[in-house]
Length: 253
Ligand SMILES: Cc1cc2nc3c(=O)[nH]c(=O)nc-3n(C[C@H](O)[C@H](O)[C@H](O)COP(=O)(O)OP(=O)(O)OC[C@H]3O[C@@H](n4cnc5c(N)ncnc54)[C@H](O)[C@@H]3O)c2cc1C
Image (tube, rainbow, N blue to C red):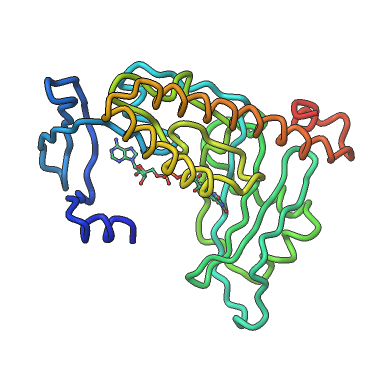
């Protein structure tokens, strides 16, 4: 929808475009992209890295990812054959001895149940369906919610709290998960991404208008926000006291 609005206002939107390289040029940047598999080159006065956790543009420009933990999610997708009237649209969060679960309805008659734990606490190698199902069987509320649904697929994803060691540089900045990614427990990933986009727009306007303060001020705003987030994360995880011997919970308390 946002891309459509941008197009209505005269911007060109390239769908299915993969940024493969970028280099400073007299007018700002020259960006190599692959659009539908066809190589192409674009010129830009300013670069915004909005590539999510990959932060692929910022990393090309020398920024490094700093991680605060090793949280990983293993998501199971279920076909939900229940009568829509019997479904519960709320997100369910349930703590477990070595992690926690969340489950939610998806729009296309599917349910998702995700086991969140640290990557080094999982069995090594391929995704282990048996291990995941055994953990699911140990839950109280989550297994009840997905019972009757058929497990269609499992997918692992990175859910760590992480940020770039720098959020901007001459002629570029990072927004959203590319700049700083948060724990799914916070449910703040989308709102933070949108908020950083609004802040970034102001910073870019200042930068292109010759005000050198715009980018450092944006970086300080992100820095403060991430520190505040880490403090809140510790408070939330600190509430769970049932498993004092669990490595997962010890790491967070
Ligand atoms: C399973 C799951 C459940 C979640 N649930 C919630 C939730 O309930 N609430 C919430 O607030 N957040 C949730 N999040 C987090 C939320 O999705 C993210 O925080 C948010 O999408 C970040 O937005 P973004 O635009 O920064 O990055 P993304 O949404 O990750 O978008 C980045 C885009 O950049 C593209 N890209 C990457 N590299 C390149 C490249 N080189 N060239 C061109 N394009 C590139 C990617 O394909 C992608 O389309 C969830 C995340 C996951 C994985």
